[in-house]
Length: 316
Image 1 (tube, rainbow, N blue to C red):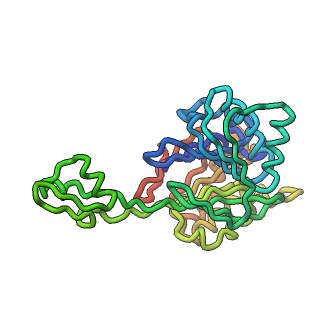
Image 2: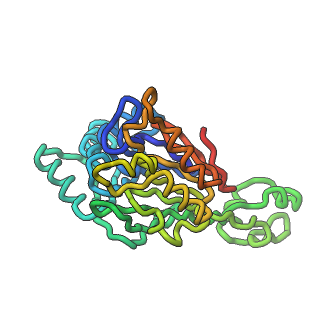
C-alpha cells in the first residue's frame, strides 16, 4: 500500500506546500485513488510517476476549496490527455452541483463517463481491493473520514511444498488458486492442502478536517495507519483570537496513543510552519511524539510512504 502526498498545506498553498491531495496505490494494481483535490493538484501529479489515465476514483472529504478546487482542471486535463477511462467521484452533498456548475458554465464536454456519488456518513462501499466506510467528522461544514479495510489475501500457494510434491510452476497453479483440485502424473493435488494462510488486509483512515480525532472511536482501535490533519501546535491554537475546528498536534498524539494506532502521518499543516520562520513542521512532530510512541511522520509534498503486509510504515 503506497501513499504519495501531493499537497500538505492547510487553507492555502505556500512555497513549500500545495493544498491537500493524497494518492493511494495498492500492490499489484493497475489503478490508483485520489483523496481530495486541492487547487493545482494536476500540476503536482506531473511531478510524480502517477498517470491521470490510471486514476480510478476520487474521494472528497469536504467542500472547502483547499480540498476540491483542483477538480475542474483535473477533469479537463484528463480529456485533453485522451484518457477516456471512466472516473468516479465520491463526496458530500453539494459535490455534484459544484462539478456540474463548472462543466456546464465552461461548456466542457469531457468525452468520458464521469460518475458523481453524493455519499452519506456511515455509508459502506465495496471495491475490488477493499471495503470503504464513510465516517463523520467535526468541522465547520460536513466533513468525512474514509476508513479502508483491505481484503485479506487468500490466493497464495505454497510453491515450495508443491515443488517438493513434484509439481513445478505451470497453469495448473492457477487451477489450485481458484480452489480446484487437479491430477498430475497420477497424483491428486487438493487445493486446500497447498494454500498458504490468508494474509490479513491492512487498515487505513484518511481523514478530512476534524477537530475531534476521538469521534472516529472504535475505527481507531489498533488501526494500521491514520492520516489526519494536524493544523496547529496547541500553544499556537490557544493563542488564536478566532478558533477554528481543527486538530492540534497535542490532541492528535493523545488520540493515537489512546487507541494504539500503529502508524501515524500528520498533514494539513498551517502555512505559519515553514522553513526559516520561528515555527516549523518539526514543532508539530515533537508535540505529537510527546504523547504518541508509535511510528510518526509529518508529511511534506511528494513524500512517499509504503505500508507493508507486516503493518510496518516506511518512508521511501
